[in-house]
Length: 132
Length: 89
Image 1: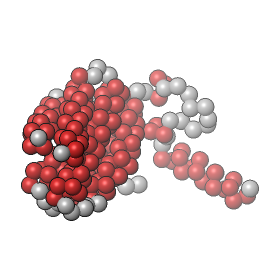
Image 2: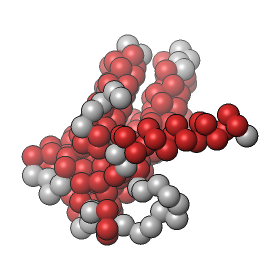
Image 3: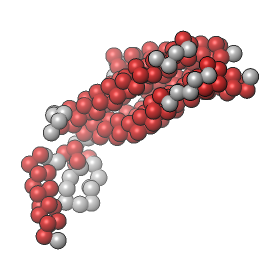
């Protein structure tokens, strides 16, 4: 009985979080704010669904399975990476180099550095590391 | 009780998937479109996990693992293409 209540609570919470994440993608006004809603809330929603299925297969069907933990771990590892890449792409497509604040070093923002310039700077850093 | 909660979760994730399709078709910027595709993949994984509970088999977890990997790689390659014009440098 307690397990059933726990599974149902996990399912309801995950459904609400998934819906809120997808709704925030439409509702929020600014692109950077829209980035915030799905990467957090939908990952928590999937986490709830996978915890519910783990409890269900453990206690009601009676067979233990590790797959859900693997999927949860994979999603938790990849969600920040995709979020970072999408934010960088948005910055690159909508802002000009002059609009951005200075980086505080010699090199420009990573999206705007040309391949030739980057190769030169990295070769210089390699040479300096070899001498030092 | 699990049946009702499962139906509720199915309805929520299905509605979320429809909202994502709306955002993919009518998106203000390209970043929103990639984000909506990424969210669609995540919602599909949740739907597959729920379907596994409904049918009582663990067979669908391999499928959702593969969908998770494909979704991650496609999102990263799309953003790399927009950033650099090149996927593998």
